[in-house]
Amino acid sequence: LLYPIYPFLTKNKWTIISTFAVALGLFAIPAENLTEFLSIYRVAHYFLYFFLGIVINKLHLEHYISTWTAIGISFLVYIPAWMLHIVIVPAISGAFVCWGLAIKIDRILTTNLFSSFRNYTYQIFLAGIFGQMVVKILYSRFQFPGCYPIYWILCILIGLYLPVGLSKLAYKSNNKFRLTMMGLNTQQISVKKPADIDHLK
Image 1 (cartoon, rainbow, N blue to C red):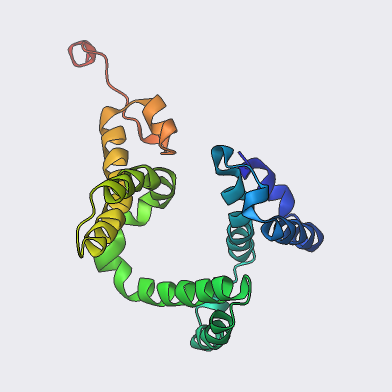
Image 2: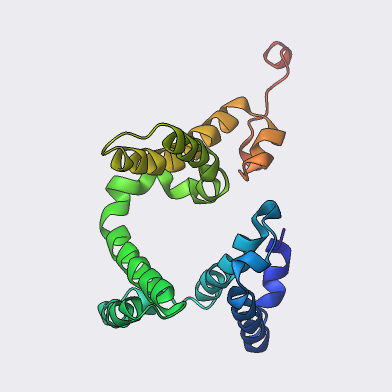
């Protein structure tokens, strides 16, 4: 729902700074003071990280984050911030470490290991959570000793493969509504020829 306003929020440095100030203010509000309806309290707290990702992408800062120097500095900031329980800093510095390493690994492995997911990143973001919710419900009800790693791996695999599978089914159905619901390109719908077109030729 907020997506249409992001171009305005990232229009210039002043709108970016102002939005960051609002995001920090929202983050500072204790979760118990916000409503759980539609997970509003989570939206308010995660908005800071979400907007940070949008700004980094818009300003093309990935190149700087993925240097070994930036990864090293972020890691050195993360360790003491985590040990001292400083608010926000461990999460952001840790995210930069993971992001930088992910870009490094991506350049090496994407062609062979992750190429099947490359065209479905939005669908994974959009639909992956629903399969993971089922796994989490199962975990809460059927726990046994040492089961956590199994559910954890299952959660990742379902979060990746369920949206990709649904996207492939949507393309196979050739249905514009289903493609739109999955955020897929409707221009790839194949146009069927009339039954008698070959006869007319």
